[in-house]
Image 1 (tube, rainbow, N blue to C red):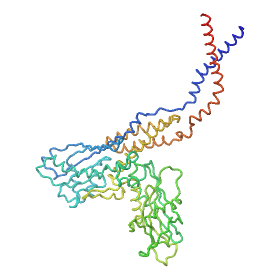
Image 2 (cartoon, rainbow, N blue to C red; image 1 turned 30 degrees about the vertical axis):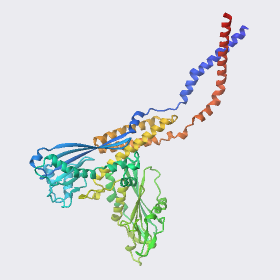
Image 3 (spheres, rainbow, N blue to C red; image 1 turned 90 degrees about the horizontal axis):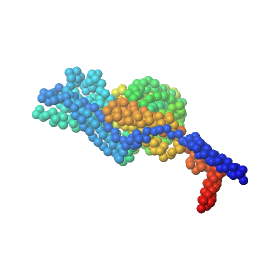
Image 4 (spheres, rainbow, N blue to C red; image 1 turned 120 degrees about the horizontal axis):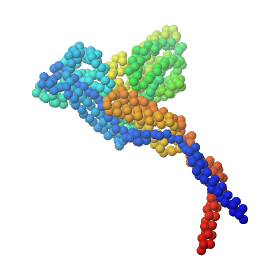
Length: 561
């Protein structure tokens, strides 16, 4: 009897020991070895980015030349003035524009520069004296009687960041405050033309705000331009559908160097560009042009242009080694049986450039050569393409694709052509403002979406690499917003590019794919066959021990009674 009791007691101790090992060691060890690793993320900083309040600061300098202010008024300059405008886009997005305007009189060297024969020469001379900082605007007020500008021109905007403003008629009895008040409207128009306007900035926020907040024209410009990217591939293609009739020669290398490369050099702060070219033989359009007897020529209507791209695109090839967007520019020389070929718009009128563009894809130009040779010419005919004519069209299309928006100046404004540079300094500033805001909006939306995803799905692994990318994106976003507020446009663009790169690397990391992880019901199906056979004996033994303990306690109490 004593041996039986000893055996039962040994069994109870064994069951308790096994249970203790499972509870104290087994379960914590299993929990630790099977838990999902989730590195720390700055969720508090990310939640602050969900509410985006941007401040754009512009430095404006108004310089009065000789003859615009009275001696009494000149005594009160230099002076400065700060004005702000606020716009609430929606519940989570707001904009504040801060204009810091400084007023001063022209220096002797600036007066000499303003005495040039033409406004273009004056603009160049002023630029040689000092170069304005990125994003700033300098307005030179010249006398009303100045011959530097034609009589019907009120404002001349040069290639740099300077503008010449013809002074409105001032009364000598006016105070300086009244003079500045009369100039405010014109100066504001100049700044809106050379810097940024509210519609373009709202369009750049399209990833965050509803379409109803954006004007139709600004949205059209935004949809036409290709999305911001760290790099772009630009491909020029010559399509020769009839090499037996035409032997085409084009100096694409020299044309790119003369017409395209200056523009790409100015756009270097925005992205990296690579340019290549190719010649495609027997490449035809995807639609058959119609012959118009009234003009004795073949025509392509605007409705059929959308069907031209897909068949041609299949022949273009792609650069599999690069993930950058590709901009295609195609020069199509019609075959002898379909020449001449003209493109018509929706109003059935011939397009002067004989070209069209597709938003975020590129452009196509039709180049007719039928007038370059007679019917008795020996085939194939050597054709040398006028690259100046072709590159003029492609340059205009490239500007649109890269987001250089149309500028509609007020009456009395004259905008100087950017010339061989392809882009004026103030046009570059307008693009930098838009791209900086667009990058900040896109990166903040991406990083907040990622944080919500990781918060909702708790079994996704967050590696240290992802946490580092998220932290880098948040830090770069905060720096970009701060630099915009300080008016440092170049640094704001740099930080915004870093933010969008880091946020997209984190968002599209392969380890975040939810399909790599099992849902909870599948986990139970896997673990139950493993744990149930082990847990049932342990649980039954513990229940038996508890039952026997209760029975002994009841027997002892009954014996005492």
